[in-house]
Length: 512
Image (cartoon, rainbow, N blue to C red):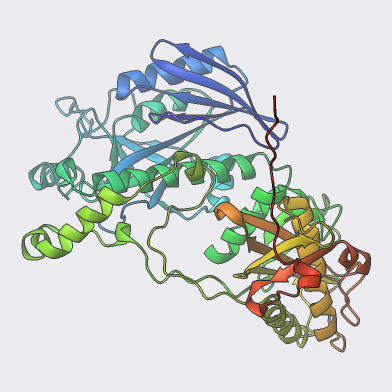
């Protein structure tokens, strides 16, 4: 069993594969039992401070003997200039900032009697979490029942410890000390709210930063649930951040199933030198390579105010800029339900260009055609890899709707929409790739199509049989056109035979 402890209270919403089995109070702690894809998680909301932390983890260890691992996920302050708001620091080394027993021989500042100078965890589980990456950085956490909120306090800490502490909090050290006395795995993920040297205690951007850091916390927990519940052996050490974003989105959509689309007996996902991933069976005897490429990646030209935090001097010299930020903060509205599973709450994003379905298909076909020129193979463990696959990911900015040809009703269901859109894309792709030979055994296109209500429809398009000859995508069914039509708005496709003119619904009142 894996435990997640935090001073932040959050709920895990019921969705496909996830269920809240039990929720109860113990002292000042809320405990939730979560089952996700056959794996149990324990989520505990603890009180602030070292005493509450020590009490909480001791109770959990005694009440749940099967608890093997505890992950502390929380908001914190940074004492390192390289960490900014929403950055995540993963720590396996913990120290106390407020323990002074140096009157005793051989005891250093921050060290308790009969305890090590620091609490360090270097277990297989820690390495596993590190391999997930998740966009985190390594750092040392210093725990005390006192926060740092001015430069004088920071100087005093540096004089005692040097530059060895990256993050300050009030709980992680106590969690680590108790966990170290057992065989329990422990790791801490701290999401930075602000730099401790900034005047964070009276920050006009406080509201926005809380939204951003809370959203990052939820996003991080969602990824951990996906990856820690996977039955695959995972090592993403050498993958890029862009590749990890794609992989995590695939886990979110299909969990382990997405990898089995390429190799049915896959048991291990290993980042490769050359390909993005090596897909291995349990014995590692039949490796297959997977290249991941992204097409038409959405560009966010405006990073939003969270990356434009004003320093002390700027506050006095740029009042107009400050006023614009304050006005912005007063007018934003955040729906908490939408924060849980989204990567980031972005605001004021400039409108993206809308493309026709045919144009998106052209971009996909060109990328596949260009990649197919390379006929070279990969090696794994000294042997040539027999098969290689291609995953093409596209965040398609298209505008469309689906209509029934007879009733002219709009079709809004995701399952029907996915099938019809796949059918529409396959028509163009097979025309454009009719003469292209490929070295790939299988090609899969993963599309994210914008839909009503800021949702996105996932669409998967796979090659028919083997693709290491002329490329042919499966899924095109002409019969579907007899009933439905995908109307591409960018083509001004307003043929009345397809769309119908307009529909009027008349409701007659019942006469008594």
